[in-house]
Amino acid sequence: MKRILLIEDDKALRENTEELLELSGYNVTTAPNGKIGIESAIESLPDIIICDIMMPVIDGYGVLEDLSNNERTKQIPFIFLSAKTEHKEIRKGMDLGADDYLTKPFEEEDLTSAIESRLAKAELINRMQDETAKEHGVSEDEMRTVHELKNFFDDNGELTSFKPGENIYEEGSRSNKIYLVLKGLIKCYNMDADGKELITSLSKADDFLGFTSFLNNVPYQESATALEAVELAGISKENLKEILNGNKKISLELMELLSENISIIKAQLLQMAYSSVRRKTAQTLLQFAEIMNTKPNEPIRISRNDLASVAGIATESLIRTLSGFKKEGLISIDGRNIQIMEIKALQYVN
Image 1 (spheres, rainbow, N blue to C red):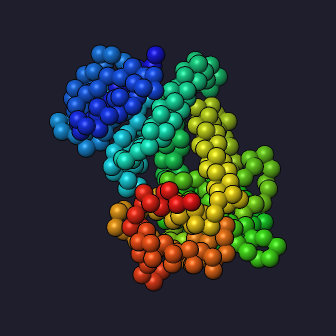
Image 2: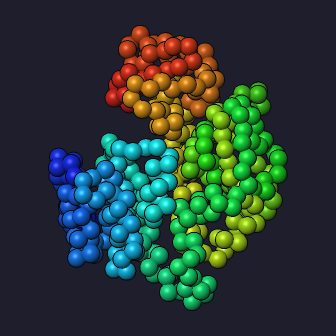
């Protein structure tokens, strides 16, 4: 049975999460603050650590930094659990070496999925650690995770900026670079034979953008346009290919990340194909709110055309549905701004 150390100062949340994890088949040890958490981790050497950030005595960043500097605990997978959602806070945790980041409130499935994924990855990495070190002479200074790869983009990538509405690249153009989104929101889309736009994905800060084949210089299969002011850091595909060829750990993490993206796109396509217009509209509003890190009582500022394109419905149908949601009190509308009033009700719209 895998052992989890849960470090959380909120007693109710700590006990509820402990019960949830025990019902999922894990052996759980808890700690009410960072100082006790560090002591428990060093003593018990759990298989994975889940840690809040805002805590008394020692905060989550201090816990991770301390454990990362300890030979006995530095390889234990570490997941942050926090209400903080700002990009700089997430990157701070990842820069310190965290493996994942979940925001409160979280779904049970999201937590267990993150744990299973990190445990599986840790096991695979341990199996090939000796082989990798022998083949490539891996040192402490080399990149080991996707988060360190993102730091490489930050430090060494070519920086470019785009205003809202500007094209980043167009379908059919040559793809020579991979980008890390540093700021802003980007839509990727295709045009059908009738000139109708279909948004295939949305990319936010800390996402990769522009992946195509590494083996052939194939053109982009979609277009990308800035929805907000965007900043990108780009490196050549050849440079990235060299990094991945020399580091199996990063290749494995990147493969996992891209697989997750494909699953999200598949779910979106299923929604577009089989859901009602009302459900498509509701799910698209929730999707934009999540991607844009919209806080409660904060409006979403997005064009009706972009909303309709993601939902896969006609703009006129979307506008009528939004009007219906407004009458029902699910949302409020002020010009281009849409504010979600009843998030739970939207989640269960059929």
